[in-house]
Length: 214
Image (cartoon, rainbow, N blue to C red; front, side, top):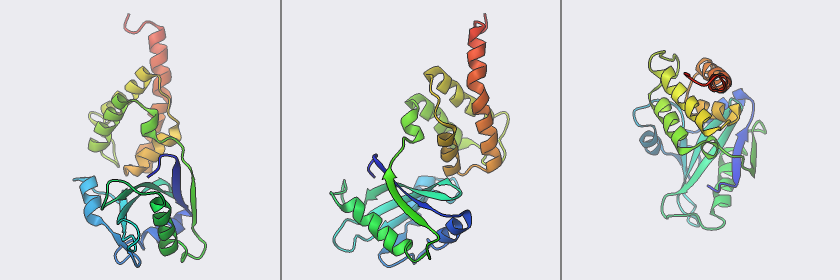
């Protein structure tokens, strides 16, 4: 998908949930729910996200995978659009798949859902260093999503926060929250992690002002 635009589906939480429940085979003419692709991405981790839908292309465009992830309880983002039969999308393919997505999967929703395709804002991966991304990946791959383990999960989260501090990086809390939601963490766990994020940088800065261990 182009890094310059972001397509999203918005609605009330109830409308979003009702819509997501319809995205199982048969989805709609020309569309299928690619559970096999989803499973390869999730590995051993259980969870709803990402959702992968495949469009046939209707004979005029390549067969294309479209990946959905939550941005909030009331918004789902089209996070990537990937051609399955060629290396790259040709001009016009992205617009075609999004038009097919809207026509087949949204326009029959009775006006409860709104589709937008707007200039993108940087995602978390655009705002943090590769080292911080590596620490975050270790945390999200191993952490308990409903109850943090104090001796395993929290130290790995702190490793990530320390790396952010070393990089002098302060990504918006909203970007962190969206990433944690996409990874399936519970609201209670997300609140705890964001609270740690809000305080750790100031604490480390004050610690360094006192000369660290010296």
